[in-house]
Image (cartoon, rainbow, N blue to C red; front, side, top):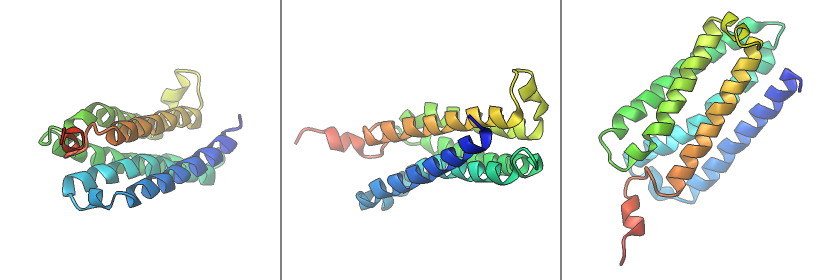
Length: 169
């Protein structure tokens, strides 16, 4: 597949996932009333929005102007990593949210790798890929992790107060 086609489809898909997530959240207004829950919902939102933005920048820069996507990938990845680490720190104080720790940690690692490839694109050549291809793989992993976060959250794992959902009357 052509890399520019991949990023066009990828970005559109991620923006669709953002819309779907907000549709789910809209049906659960109570999630936004509790600060811990609002942070988790926002973190899941970012797990689709940030890759979508990077996909847009990859289309704008493409192979002709790699500086555009490289700089944007680094900046967006730093923002994603910082917000994820912040969620991890808050989750350590909330036993329910601690169940989201593994996928959030994995997301932080992937954000770091995206930034590293943006800063040192020659590293991708060591595994036989062009930098923009390596980033595509990492972004796909990031969205996969986002799906895992949604699944765990919707299944009640990592959702503050989820124990009350399953408690017998």
